[in-house]
Length: 137
Image 1 (tube, one colour):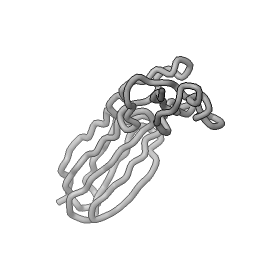
Image 2: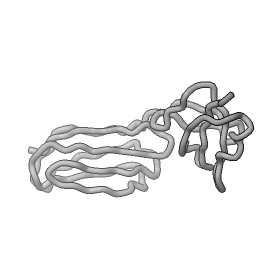
Image 3: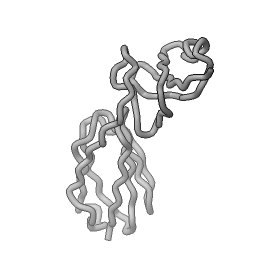
Image 4: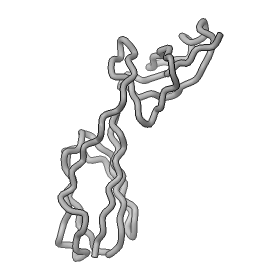
């Protein structure tokens, strides 16, 4: 009989899931990984391992980013600040201008020179991804 399993790394990030005979579950983990048997399908996008020793699967908390405004002047002076970010957070800007970076101080201030609608995708380890949309006019 096959059982479901989840393989995770030492940060709690679920790397892959699958099913195998119980006797084969233990060999699914590679170096630097651990494996746990689970009773239901695991969703890598919304879940992580909150207790590495016990292999406890939990729902990822919200990222919690706070944006001070969603409309900004496209004059290179007016700015928008996104704060409350876990350290580090990866950010990716899409729109008339593309950009990406790792935020290592919990906030980012953006200024825009080109008008248009922008999408900002924020990702941090073991948190739900968050997408913010804003307009530069």
